Length: 127
Picture: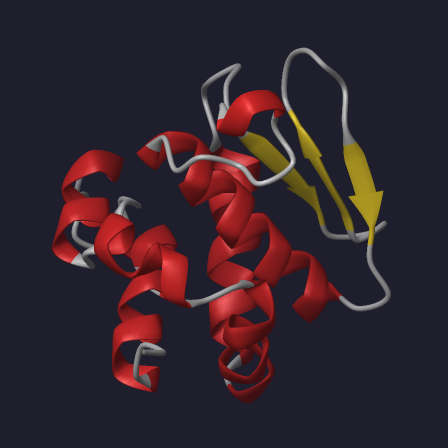
């Protein structure tokens, strides 16, 4: 069963919730609060895109989240080139046609990484 828009918005608010501009939650606390792992198998980046297109502040929050990262782990998002890539090894990146698409992909990749959600394209289901 697909998550509701309200549930997806909670996931999309993780960037704001973990920032000093928001609630200042730890990423793990924010992932638990939005029940990311429980819902993750029922949505993909494409399900987030309409909500991102509807509210451009969501994209801005994720761009700031990526810019503010102070870790060598996870993923990055480059607004100007619409590139989403993984930090560290192995190197992997993709460029998207719109910033909305890039943000949707970034959200899923980044939150999958930190929640240890198994990647479909990883060998033997490893993340």
